[in-house]
Image (tube, rainbow, N blue to C red; front, side, top):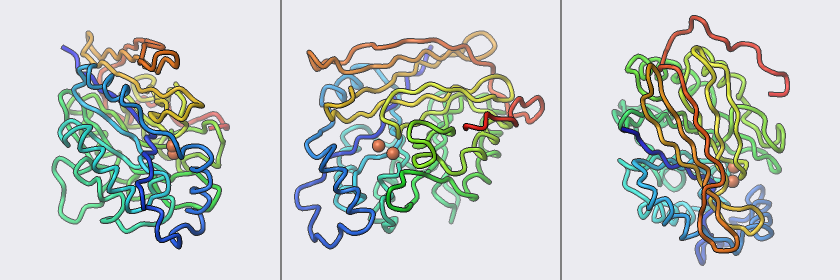
Length: 314
Ligand SMILES: [Fe+2]
Ligand SMILES: [Fe+2]
């Protein structure tokens, strides 16, 4: 019996008609983002074939790791909410935001909070901050982090911040003790990627340290718009860190998504990952890569951690 998790990211959904008015909204970093959007994505739309491919995959759950918008305009958040409603109900869909969703500071209720239904903790504590949140789905414990913070013009960086980093270890430990397959969802990867520090998670070393000491079975991210594979040292073995390609068809990179088939295998877990990319000739999505990993049982111990020293480039 396996559980299928579909992962897509970086939708950069079309800016709705009229959303750019009044033009006074387009100032500062949002103006730069607008110029980039006109240059790279103005005519791009998410592929209906991609959504049909996910629907046909038999996925038990879908994870979306941010950058649903381009300019963080209130009308974009509302349009993205409508799109998410078509993608799946909250019990089948988990969402975390990306840096474009925090291009500028937008009040929670008009911005990222528009997607609250897909980000609400299963057992929200009164007054608790929104992140990290927990979704238990089948054998999975999906832990959503937000790396979406407004940054300086020209920066696509992210930051988790002290509050999220303080709450994450206990959550990982608790889910590890329950023997669940812990999936950490975060827009920015926990290591330097293409673009270096300008595009990186500022407190990535702290996140790597926590994952190294407390463990996770899988980290899923987006942000770089291309498929990426990495791993981090964890207390019981390597923690796979997998980046999914952009879901948006811009004509420059092939859009795609990843399917993760998770099953208990012997003492631990088996993770089968399939990268699905669009065939530019036919528009259909096809298997581009498939690989299988065997992972150790979920653990939550700090003992025996192999993490602590990381390559300087990270
Ligand atoms: Fe993006
Ligand atoms: Fe991003």
